[in-house]
Length: 613
Figure 1 (cartoon, one colour):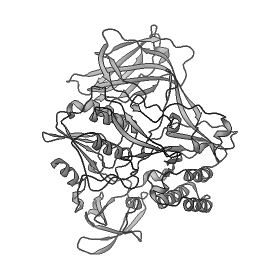
Figure 2 (cartoon, rainbow, N blue to C red):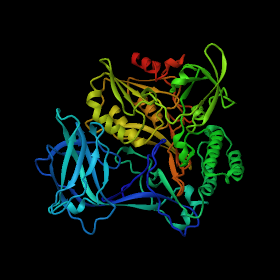
Figure 3 (cartoon, rainbow, N blue to C red):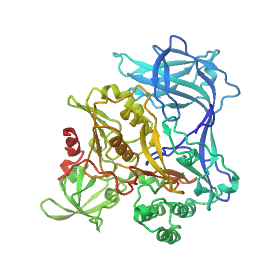
Figure 4 (cartoon, helix red, strand yellow):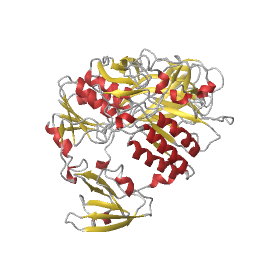
């Protein structure tokens, strides 16, 4: 929630599996027990854009997270000066920042320099622009810019065109320069007022704030407070190693895990097993310890929203020339990225074992993970060829393999298929999604069918998802129900009506593509769009993942260790009155894949089916 007109708090992505903030915690050397904190960015504005009558224009900027909508902008017609109003008091610090929102067409770079004279100016601040449309709000460190603003204060703006033969558009939505400061706040979340945390000992009372939806929600449960939705938590403790912190924090998280009944596992049994497991393994080196925790969590809960990440540097270099896909009850080789292997094995070949370990017939967590190794390491597999021959194969992992683009579809890629279909790929749900879709909506509306590809989408921010859906639904709509885990009370979340200029055509048909990796907020989008808009169909090879929860990231002070967990959630999502954990959402049209060639990187039978619907 915003702290005042000049300061605001910021959250990591609130739902899904996505983004951790790249901020580091300043720790006290006297701390004996861990404290759990979240971060607040406080801003004191010194200069704001003044503009003049020739620059100001009517132009709508959609809201972008905590930055509200705007109904005017400042059109830049040529390189020149931007007048600023305000005054900087004191000495510029390293915390000085320039904030700006932009809309661009045919622009590759935008540069800002001081307008003053009398000395050699430092290198200008520069923003690179990768595509047309509304740009993600930018924060640039600006302490070296301030001495050169001049009197009266002004910025010198220049830009580079992507194509000098075409016209361009450059509109500034808002701009300010000021001092920003990152402050720590003790988290009042229930889990952190009990051992092993010391939050309660440091705070006698908590100040709670209403949940801040940045204006997106028409209604949100009043008993759900802003402080419970801080997505990134930072642990303050200089006395314990990462192993010790993990061993102390995990039992507390497991004690608060919200889905024992849903997943039909015994809480008492898990807690006893966890205690014995940690006692047995906590003295392992950090990376093997993290591996063992992840194996334990997956075997015990089978929950993709509960895992540990660690900065084990050599893992960044893991490679594999083969990728598999679980097809018709078998692990089939679905990608070969090494020419020497292509002569020894073909697409569709069945993978039977890796390094002598026979693969279970039940689906494992990540068979491709078994194949990834450090460059130079040797891998041995057993395969069954299409003609029935069983053979052992081996290779040495290379430094790099070239992966075709079809195996890694670009986020927010758009293309037209024939005269009537627009295809739009959504790989992540974050602030960029509604901004990008709004930028492209005029083009999207030239086609009567919109295919939204959510395959492999693991989720993201539920407010960004709500904003995107509002462009497709238009009116106020029921988003989901939220069940308080403490009281069992069920309340609703309602999104306000779309009051922006951005509306998908009312006569358009929407086809959603899903798969078993479509999870979390991507599932919420699928359910809500099908429930709230006419002429929506869902196409996929199987049901979605069935994993929908608010996700938090607990950052430990050493070794870049992050615990991603849904154990801090104060409530449970209900869709249509029930949880979809482990159930997912079934497609309206289930596509049966008969062979590897039917997969997305090849003929893409799911997309072909969607085109025909």
